[in-house]
Image 1 (cartoon, one colour):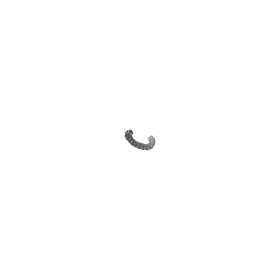
Image 2: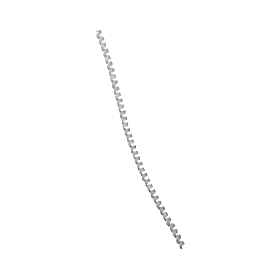
Image 3: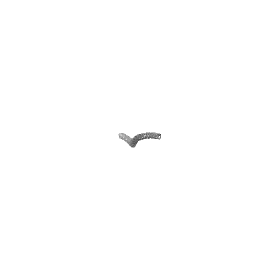
Image 4: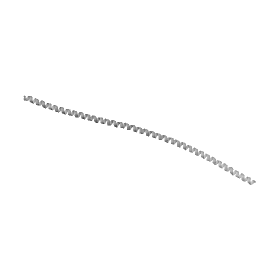
Length: 135
């Protein structure tokens, strides 16, 4: 009978150990599930941050490309304006040189006319003086 009581006591002790271990396993399973859920939330949060940063990076890359394209377009436009103005300056320089040459030719022609008229005037003055002297 005492052997049976001893066995019952040992069985009861083993049942308490099993119950205690099952409680520990249950708590640890809950902690593991909570920890896993928390890690999952943290991972989701990190994924969202990564997605947000990638989206910002794409937007900024697009803005940078757009800005560079606009600057390239503005530079090209300025180059075209410079080229056009240089062409105008070249044409105006040619026109000025042509006009100056023409005016120079006209001045030479006028000088020749003046010289010719002065020569005629001298001859006519001489003829007039000669005619008066003969009278």
